Image 1 (tube, one colour):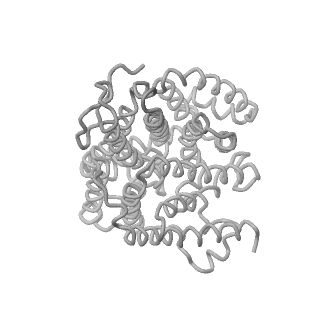
Image 2 (tube, one colour):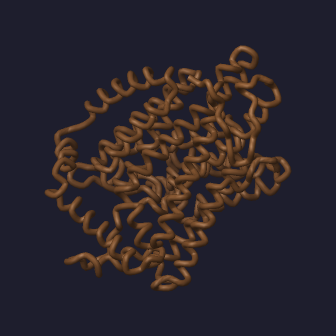
Image 3 (cartoon, one colour):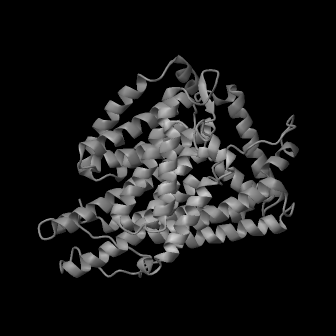
Length: 461
């Protein structure tokens, strides 16, 4: 048994048992296992021999821990924020298309997709109920960073399959072990790493945040995937717009230094591949994507309610000339349109919109922290932190969604969990706003709180 495997079993068994006493630990280990995907690792022979579903085991022990500590997690905040409600509605619609679609209960892909989305919704419920303080939320972000560092280290060490000099597959979790999915997953990690770098008080925290960002960028470059470029561009632009003024200069300086370092990691092959974006009509891969997207539009025209969950692969050969095998839509939104029709796409966009609604609500609660700085410095610090947390996570999701426009991420757990983290921030912000109302009588801070609506404080600069 290798040293790496020993460490894994210590973390896995310890986390599983600890989750029954402290469910937060189960959430953190679940995110870490999601990144490691032990079943596919070179050190995971014993996991495969035991036919152990590691994510399921951790989710089960976390559920048991939550039930044991039920009173501890009973609280006035919403257990079903609007984003989660819309997610359940989306799940119900997917189930309808599965049972009564063009091909009812159509094949293994359909069953896998509906089963996966149901499991994701259960974990999201656990996440919303358990993660309720800023300290817990910070640990949650660090669990994402731990997974990012591990994946980045493996990529740097040469793990994974290389095709024509680029990292193409067999690295990352089950949801993102292909190059396009891996790069789309790592783009939002750069935003979270940036937040942790600027907000960490210790040198150790800054070091690990910087390490995670460096490994993420290096791995993205190794994949040579083009969908990461627009994602990173939008992430940077939105981030600079949304950041408080005091951090913008620091962020710009960091971006200049980081970009200069990243350029040293690129090679001629990377620049040649990116150059195809200037003349997309001359690249066969990009042209094929246009064909798949056109096919998705035609499917929706023929079947307004969708061809059925997981059925794009089966239908696309009938819509694209000289295509004999099933292909992915290479776009989350076109895939949703084809498989779930116009109602499904509308519901999915509503899930996204409500996620940003919660991010923005939490962000607004953090405004006006300077008004509390003299009388209540600790509360002002929390208020500022939640403002930055909501900003960074909203920017991260924004970057992910842009990447998802060029690769199929509809059934990817990471994207759903990142969006659901907005519900955690919404509840944390609700508690903070109640405390603000209790400790201060200042008109610039005191506001009535209405469930689902977090109002801003004027005068923020």
